[in-house]
Amino acid sequence: MSVLARFLGRTDAGLDIEPVRKRHLPEMLPIEQSSYPQPWTPGVFQSELDLVRLGQRHYLVARRGGAVVGYGGLMFVVDDAHVTNIAVAPAHRREGVATRLLAELAWEAIARGCSALTLEVRANNAAAQALYRSFGFVPAGVRKKYYENVDDAIVMWCTDLAEPGYRERLAGLCPEAGR
Image (cartoon, rainbow, N blue to C red; front, top):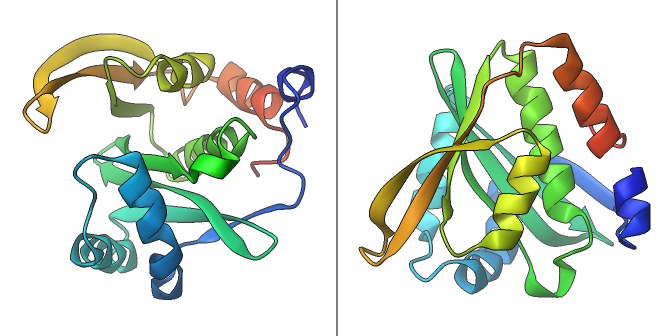
């Protein structure tokens, strides 16, 4: 557990991370619905899992006590990885689940030779922005009315994945994750 996680009283003790499988979808859908005003449908998730088999996506699920408590995913585009989503069940937020998922996704991007990570985050989601900044993401632009044609998105990039110090950063943020 990282020093920051201990300080904030967060722990990922008992948190298991594994690749998303079709059997996880029934537990993921309520998390999706509680996290997004326009949630992905089962069909969208199935399409994404089909792209996993082609090596174009990577999705992880976080389980605690056997129950799915969060998930996250990456899309690979040339030398970059795009975080498609990170969602955590409301009862398990602020427990380090998103940190662990993002760390595992970052390690996967590094393993695949990606030099950068990118994502969009709601302009009004300060907690998510703070998490992403701790991983080295910086704002690079705004997509007006990106979410539901209402809310703006901040486009964030982390461009130092290939730097030796980034692995140290990840290890410091979440020593339980990684390679």
